[in-house]
Image (cartoon, rainbow, N blue to C red; front, top):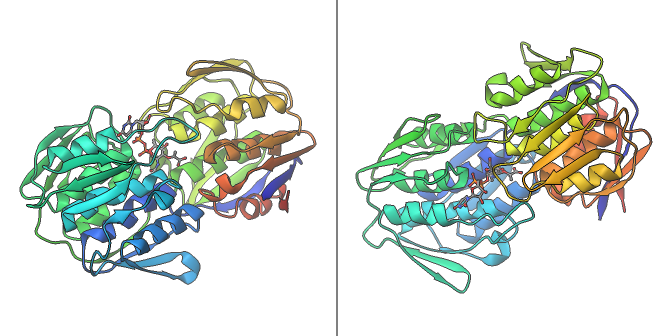
Length: 421
Ligand code: EPU
């Protein structure tokens, strides 16, 4: 099994290209099931989660062709050959559940495995199911599978999500594009990945208004056609790499990034004493002062501070001046990086959904274990700033969401390599 070896060696300097967003792409790929015509996605990140979604779509009868070393994916769902998404694939990745809405809308029937919990929390799918039921779908839960049907087609409705869930918004939105009549989805998610999905669906002929606001209005159409869509930049990859020069006292330009995608993350960085400047090609980031200030953080839905950057921010706060509280409000168990950071000399106290972090002068390298995607990269950030060597094991989590992390950081001077462990 691969591990990543990092030797803390001072300031990172250079340019880091930002890939297309994993989470946008995982929302966009199932949209191919809505049309008989091909959907081509460009700026696709080369990640194991994207390969998993390709396998799932292939199992449903979609032809998937990867071009340009996987940067472009052409999907063609001429017919739905199979409407059952098996546990074997769905258990690997929760985003697999996104095929339910499109399958139901186009095919009238779907059997999709329940995704189950995962390391960061229980993550149920009740909001997805309630939304699709509001559109007239009949649901039965049997042997760990959702059996969903809409033999007479889905019908538009007004529905309010109890929480602005990203996945539920995507599922219901896709289903509503082919429903009869108007759907008004209230308390919808406003994340940039939702806006990107709406742009793609609109290019396929869907009639949608309100993206980026709390209410999405969808006028159902009879059919959607093919299109080519460029996947939006990965704001979480961008936020992660923005912290690399900050934690190492360096300066890096993120190429292809844009501040608008980052919501209040940038405000928090300013508060902590970080300079973020737009450039012609992206953004440049460096420390504004010798020592980073501790700042309190509360994760929230967009445009609030993203839960997917909480672990990375914790790594930075471990070396900041003073103490701060990081409150996690989206997932109930997303502090598994804390004990690993403590192994590196960090001072962290976790009480329920809040972690109190007191900065130390210097972290120390240690053998640590990655527990989920964002936790793994937070350990790499901490390792870049630590004295000595850190071996991060179980990096398959990292490969789900970060493309060539060792090359991107290595190009800025980091001593980082992938080793067999
Ligand atoms: N929730 C429910 N019932 C539901 C759906 C969600 O209780 O039916 C709860 C979840 O358990 C969680 C909260 O609502 O506590 C938020 O979940 P949401 O549905 O918004 O998240 P998601 O769609 O499952 C996506 C991203 C996550 C990201 C979250 C929040 C994808 C593929 N995944 O997950 O990304 O953390 O939104 O922004 O888009 C990651 O990339 O590391 C990652 C975990």
